[in-house]
Length: 362
Image (cartoon, rainbow, N blue to C red; front, side):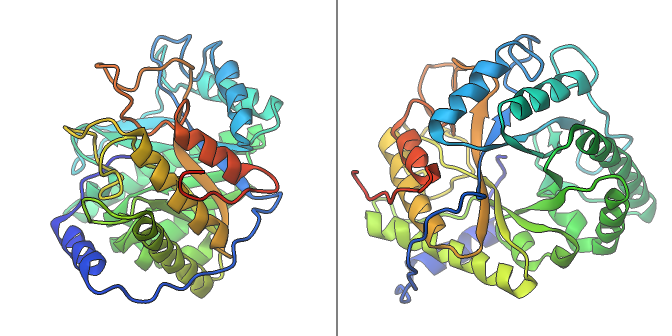
């Protein structure tokens, strides 16, 4: 998901990346094991019914992921909030063309029939905001939120159990809720385990939330939505980008060891735009198209992933529910989708079994 970068975090990252570099520990690159979840986020990009989760174009799009050696997909049904500070309910979409239950189940079954593992990853969409802004000032509002959220997530836990889904992500980037009410999350996790027997994870926002979450031990895997900058420089070298990828991967590895839980990248990706390494989460805005920049970022990510001894799953952001989806109205390729770009070749080599080392320019 796209979210704003807070001035404080940007300042800290700027200072960290522009001071005299500390020696970066390197590790022997490993082969990604056979049971590694070589994942892709499968996005509902069509709202005309035939091109969304419930359409007949889903099958060909999922089939195309086999060419990238993908073996797992994240399916992401959204609910909606008009205001991050007001809560009435969190509805399950029911109208035609939306991520309604029939459409979601259709995509689940299409993926399972093709041998893919699935992480069901329900998320909240807020117009003009992001889930990290969900926050309330009164106990009554917090009670309403957690009542609504619990009912909504329970709905998908029941679906996940009925469909034999391998993993359920119980939340995404709800920074204020996890920071202020960890006990409520522990209670929710316990309740969800009563109806769902698969693996549970939470997709924490990069930075403060991931690094300080207090209930990792209640989950089966630590989920990180990683949009850490690789560099703040205008023209970094490939070595600079790799050092940046290693820096955040090694930080995530160390936190994973402390909590004795495997590390999953529940979201990671880079736009094909100029300077994508500076703020990977951000909109393209006025940055020009650059397939080379995206590829360079993927090379750094690929090497860091192979060096991690904690990483067990990676879900790249993202892949459309129908082939031929346009990334932008002006026909530029400035989105996250790696398909049809050099980044796809790099990802294919990383996800191969045995995986193949990728170097800049290879």
